[in-house]
Image (cartoon, one colour):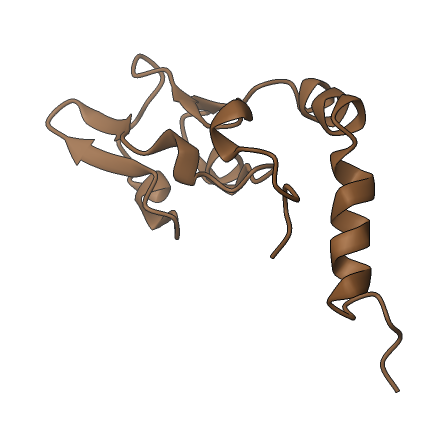
Length: 103
């Protein structure tokens, strides 16, 4: 899937941060399908930040302690605009036939 259309994922600063003082150790973050988190005696840690799906913030939405935060979404949108990522993604999706109406 052309999420970044060739732009390196490691250059996109989108991943969670955990405030362990707020963490109630509910474990909801461990449901992450990308396995971004690892559980420790102190609670969760962000073990694989670049596996986080860019734009996703489901774990923060579900966190009982409101302990998970993400970077400002507008900065992400600015990066996509500045690097022309949206246009490149659209071009890839058109090429793959994913923007053709289904019959």
